[in-house]
Amino acid sequence: MSTTGQVIRCKAAVAWGPGRPLVIDDVEVAPPKAHEVRIKIVATSVCHTDWECLYGTRKGMKSRPFPLILGHEAAGVVESVGPEVTKFSPGDKVIPLFLPQCGECERCQSPKTNHCRRNWANTQMGVLADGTSRISCKGQQVFQFLGVSSFSQYTVVPDTSLAKIRSDAPLDKVCLLGCGVSTGYGAAVKTGKVEKNSVCAVFGLGAVGLAAVMGCQAAGAKRIIGVDINPDKFAKAVVFGATECVDPGDHSRPIQEVLAEMTGGGVDYALECVGSPAIMSAALESTIDAWGTCVIAGWTETEAMSVVVEKILMGRTLKGTYFGGWKSVQDVPNLVDDYMNNKLKLDEFITHTLLLDQINVAFDLLKSGKSIRTIISL
Ligand code: CU
Ligand code: ZN
Image (cartoon, rainbow, N blue to C red):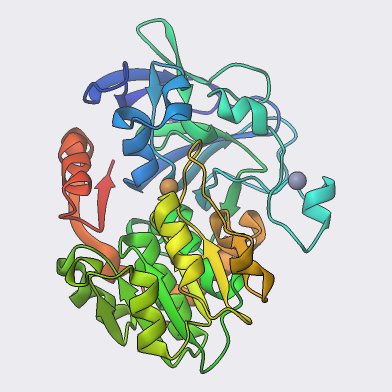
């Protein structure tokens, strides 16, 4: 029986307020409006940003509206499309995107950035283009996280925030390309433009950092130094291409001095994948003064990073990356191809697989550092 044009009743993990575990509830998902697509989420993973939004203490995150359905790293199948949607049809395999690519704005036209601002303000407020969400629970509007909300069996997204991918892609793997893996990999190959035979350091060996290690290796780096205060992460980093690993806790000196000594003056590229201002400064200072590049992939909304001017005056470059610099709609399908052609690893990130009603366990695993990525099947 077709569900096109009907309200769909399904399960979702609803965040009813900050600091409270998610609750599996029945929700109602309205049909898509103009330029919107309703998708059946098949697999989603849990990213730090989801956790941060619910339990985090960083200031900006407190203002997210509740009730809210989190989740933004996912893959699914198009169920139906709204009026004026031309690029998607029911049955298409897709990856929803928290970063749109409208293709029309000044930023989309520029090769210098991937930061499309289409629907940006609404997305931050948890609503779609018309100022409302398509999801409700017990008669109450439920806000959408980053315009996605993948902790729901169905969701509605703008047609500019959706990448169509090849039909043979396994959704329970390629969902990882919706956020963390693409961010880390792109930080190295796209934003950082890591060069062959270079020396790299990657700070933080979670999913983003491991993907950055993978990117450095793909770019042909000759040394890739993984840095983390949890040595349990080192074995995995080696799988992704790290040539050596360092625990700052093993040294009495600042890590930037340790790295400078290890490399005879500093690394060519440092990739910060933690989201800590102190580590960002250390990453910058660990690069060689004359030409080192530091890329910030870690995310923080309100905390300030301090940069000593002298540290960049001799020729260092400090860059930030959002979603790895990828133009989301056009580049994500290519990353899926790279995975299918064995040029990019995904399976190795997956440490756990759970069902939707175990989602709070996935949050615990992430917070305790026991998981890299947990895949939730819906
Ligand atoms: Cu994320
Ligand atoms: Zn745009």
